[in-house]
Picture 1: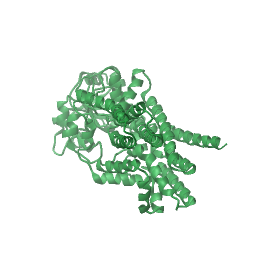
Picture 2 (picture 1 turned 180 degrees about the vertical axis):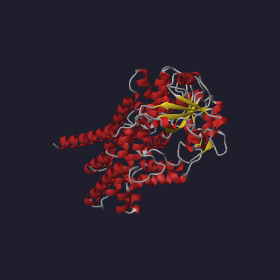
Picture 3 (picture 1 turned 90 degrees about the vertical axis):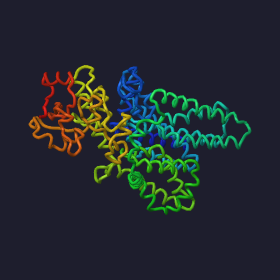
Picture 4 (picture 1 turned 90 degrees about the horizontal axis):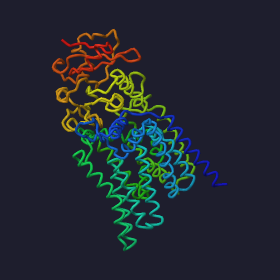
Amino acid sequence: MKDRRLALTLGGIFLLSLTGAWLLRFCPDDAFITFRYAQNLALGHGPVWNAGEQPVEGYSTFLWMLLMSLPHFLHLDVLLFARLAGLISLAGMLGFAWKIFRRQLDKGPSLLLLALLGTHFTLMSFATSGMETVFFGFLVVLNAWLYERFLQRGMQSGFEAFLMGLALALLPLTRPEGAFFALPLAGVVAWKIQKSTTNRAPILLLLLGFGIPVVSWLVWKIAFYGEILPNTFYAKTGNVSLLKGMLYAGLFGMSFFLPLVLVFPLKNVLKSVRAMGIYALWLMGWLVYLVVIGGDFMEFRMWIPVLPFIYLLAGKWIFRPEVGRFRGFLVLALLALSNLVHGFSFGKLYYTGFVISRGRLDHEVAEPARGLADLGRNLAGLLGRPSDLRLAVSQAGALPYYAGLPCTDILGLNDAWVARNGKIISTTPGHQRSADPAYLQTQGVNWIVGRLVYASKADFPTENPEQRPEIRQLCLLEEGQEMTRFVHALLYIPLRDGSWWVAAEMKRHPDTDDLVARNLILRQKLP
């Protein structure tokens, strides 16, 4: 009877989490960057940004990119495929988290912590975002469970050690930061094997299981891209702000865990941290890492890989023998309330600075007519055929993916030169550098569509475009630069909501002339 009640309770938590994840589904623009690489791989061009051009590693999730090539090979809906993979990852993450909670805490606290984890707003949201975030979190928890099992029964065979090494290898193959989790864990397991037996074969097989796929991948990266680190590393570390990193960490803590800090003295957390073992190292190291890189601009996605261990630490902190159970359950209820308040208020009732809310990320891509996905589809529909018309884009995901055109990435995530040499424009991760119009000219850019500018038909032709701030920003002009030195016309592309999307024309192209000749778009020549 008790087993049945437990199964029903666990089933209810899983169902609630998966249902919530589906209801909160969205897709940020960055997901489509990986989709574009996966699409080119499926088309036979290799994992590249632009087919036929110098390869650049503008994605940071090799294994997820390979996985996303499958729906392109099979002509399936890539976003639906990614969301289903995210839901499976969420279920797996919860399953292994339950096993870890249960090994270290009693059944009641473990169930409550699992419910908090499964209904965490950020976790549910990113499970169906099309990104690799929850898949990576699942792999972290999977390896933690393999470690727990190793602590319980030791390494049973060399083959088991080899398989554990393979599981560890999946971490850096999915995210470069995965090495932060994999290397310490591999070291601890090897050390414990060395202490328990004189047989060194399991250690060798563990290292081979980890090293063969990782070294093979690194060798391939050097041969294909010419370097080990992804281009995104250079684009995101050109002007790091430690202050933003601290704000990112502080805003996360205030959003979800403020009741814990208010009710329990911080000094007591040290006892719980010591009981966490290697998970404490992961937590402290991950916190330092996020601060050092300046945080992230998406709503707390970077915390997902360590979220189960944050809740495990909270459980050990709350359910100490000297703390009454009523007090512990009360704090867990307050944590649940904090999560609920966050979901309804973040980015809606108060300013969140550089951390963009899930709702805003979704609106940017999915807004009818003006969303990046519809802009790309609209442009592809106007052209009606493959084209080598080249765009310069700041939003490097959905618009290039659906337009199917060669692009230059203004912010440098997919451009090696901009990532290293672009002018500094901010301290926001991934938005720190920018190309200038002179560089775009060298790349043969036809249209600049970096800053999204809209107009009504009554605005055509635009009066004094040289003086309009939004037009100058579209053209990436600095103070004193003449617009006509780089841009010779403005283009007005009709949208299905009756408005017009404005692009800056740097270089004429036969397809642009054809669209103008057929009155599908309007061209305003600059004097």
